[in-house]
Length: 605
Image (tube, one colour):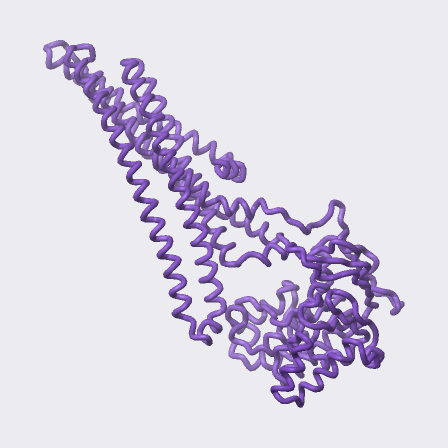
């Protein structure tokens, strides 16, 4: 039940609509009791007439008119309450929950996404929102009116027969206990199904996102079989789940049948012995019949509660996930002043240690600095910590020890948004969003003019191929830019980074996956991007960093070498010299010699 209280807490924002709904529901519940009471009056008048006593038949028509008016009011109130509850409240609740969830997920640190499948997150969001919305609708449309109806019915029955009221009062807890046990078993199965469903939907999302890989490896059948197996598990659990539910439902109905039979027999017996009038018998039977609906609904309501509890658990768990990296109280914007003193350090790493959650040390005692407008190249074997250095600078993670400064400011003391505004990144595989080329270039500067966009596209060597497309800048590029070549995507990514006009540029293997012609075009764009900016370049192809001002060699998470390329190449025992020699050898090596050479170093290119 913990999730239910959380749901109520998260949705208390809509208390005014809840209150408005409650007024209509109470009115409908009370008006629904008018007809049984008035029908008793009609029966009493007819019985008097049959027994030869004086009665006014016109009174019956007045009573029928009141019943009609009552039914009309119920119809109007029901329509209004359903419009407010089922439509207005539902859509506003969905919008609110979606916004809150998406806002929170976007604010979570990168480490959360390292351990999660994107499709699973989306599936948890949709299931949670649906579960919460259906629960709120059910609570307002069923729980409150049925509770009020049952309460008033029992009070009216007690006026005529305390025994009948007691029998009904006994029936309610018996019915609820059986329903509660039923719902508990239901939730056990539902939780198992949710785990399988999340894994399955996450896999489907990944398969569709990587459909080219799936087809390239002729893995369509394998993906389908995996999906069908998961669906088979869900089917099997559902069959067992519903079997138990219907067994409990049968027990509920049997208990209800016996007790209601006893109540009806009691009413008929005492009516026969003239303790109740015919009108009172009619009223009592109607009230008992009316009490059946809350009882039948009780299992549905408890089921809804348990489904909401199971369906919203993952959703609420994500909402309560702590944000590890966030702005400190009183954090200020990062300010970078263009200093004429070129010798002044812009970026500094001082005694930085870092390890991921699983405990393995990645960086140890990292110390280096980058001057304003300097180009620094990060070199080393794969998995030695080069990308981690960049991730720490972007504050995707925080070091366990040490300080990182930009323009003399500790980046842990500045606002994250201002930090990211000052840094532009071009990754090895630049992610482009579905939509147009125009939308992708202006992603970091939504209010950019067409002139600005065309200017950066020209500088990135992208304008020419864009103009050759049928819709030019308004051309749809497909999901992740699938309609473009690798070089074209990379040039759009460079134009996007240029338009952002950040003083610090990070190039993470920006040309490693390109062919020679594309690499030349992209490299020209990168050179223009880095002009008059402070740049950090990660590259395995050492030829791409020939014009770097300094080179930082990372080995086993430590700074192995640091300095100009011309100085580092002189150190015959240094890692940089060995990597340069290796890459030169690989250009002319036989396959056997290549394999033998690569055993010593773990390199991508």
